[in-house]
Length: 187
Image 1 (cartoon, one colour):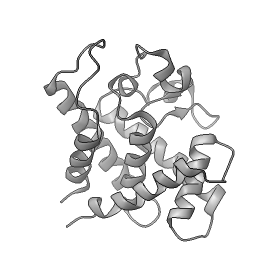
Image 2 (spheres, rainbow, N blue to C red):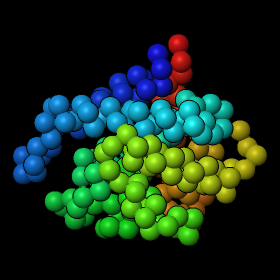
Image 3 (cartoon, helix red, strand yellow):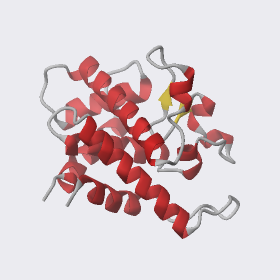
Image 4 (tube, helix red, strand yellow):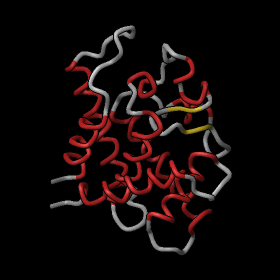
């Protein structure tokens, strides 16, 4: 099974099946096309920038972050304001499924280009998510082997931008990351 096929199966299982009744519906067909773009974006980024041990570790990290941070929300993915402003990308300070904040490493246009449901925009978001995860890993776990502990510290740094002291939520996400890796390995 390819990373794309495994990622699509996981995303389809994890993403909410339907939008709430008070939000514009995403048709079944639109959802399927959007989730395929997510799976392609994750697989493309994992192959282009396999980080750490393999592409499956990279893809598992991106999927874990995206599921936890945004639940693959259609509004966040598209980069349009969420009907509930409290749910939209750190109150407008972040972009795409990875909740990427603008930094000195990217121009305003590059940051804006992270949002969008196309395969290309989704791949850009996945690559930005991987860069942020890699940076967080080197800050918090440089030279240590990949483990639940090192990934928990990485995820805490990713989420907070300032701490390597892993909390319960980061530990839960790290365990999910570890658990997803075998699902993405090629068979």
